[in-house]
Length: 414
Image 1: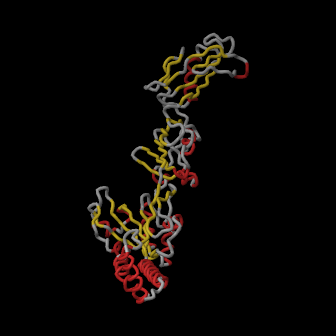
Image 2: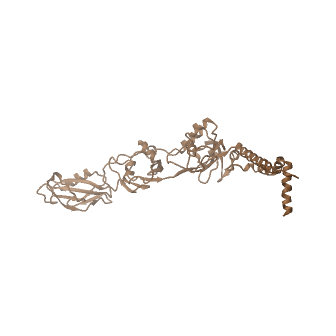
Image 3: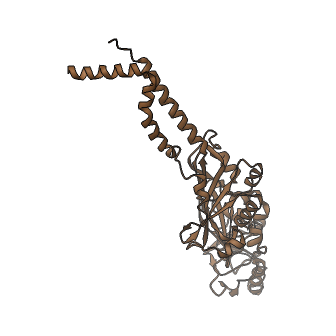
């Protein structure tokens, strides 16, 4: 124990005699080791130079393209990803008439003037009925509803088989009246479509009551049909509407339909409306104020809006010249000359890294119409000076620590 204590006193005496400079020389190997590891500071992702050198590197059998974000590039990408409006893709259907079709259920009411002998006063086919025309003749019989068969016909007592499909209710009224004219006393006929099964639109997806919604005259527009299905079951800004007619399929955010009356198109029988709840997001990484997955609306956001939502860049660490958007891009959004010769991923896309120089004022104009896409990665690299600054800070901290330690050791009197 005595020898160990003697060794400590000897070391203390040696450091005291040599002073703080000896401490610094003793710490030099540690400082050099820290310098060798300087490259690891701020390692939140690849450096700007490493990303720029990725041009041509193969990903999913396709070469990466590094593209500078300019006004021309932003407009080309925005045009390629713009959803075509319903008014151009599907278009307005012809106004629907009140025409009877196979599967429709009819309500037919017949009145006879006294003395009524054929139907016994007032007969309602397909309705319990409560009203009486003029309050003169009361209803006294109910007959089950009449459905138009697959041949488009109905069968009515005393009138026989009547062609109904493709005709309006008033045309069928006149046909029934003419057939009963020789048997009933001054017959009066009213025909209504109780259940419209032939002129309907199928509504599925995120609605409160999906199914077939009938198209009524003056009420066959897209928003009328969605309302007829109980409305959407998700927030409006998270919903996309898809309309399918024949071989055409088109999509638009519901918010666009609500704000642009031209997109509230008139639907046709047989159309299919699908209401989709889509959760769009991009990921912010690197020297940003927020590193997270950030959701956005179905109407989309721009690069400028994305920078705002993630809180901008870290002023003390970010390389403002090196903001990157990583994306598997549609070939239509890539320069034609590049797209023509570039191999593509199995799903037909091209890996692209968009580079935005936020030190360039013109980039902010381009960022206002450069669209962000679902699953994009927005990465900001660390500035090289930031690593050097951090290293110098650590170096200074270590030096002052050793100097303070030397001054704190009392001198040993021989």
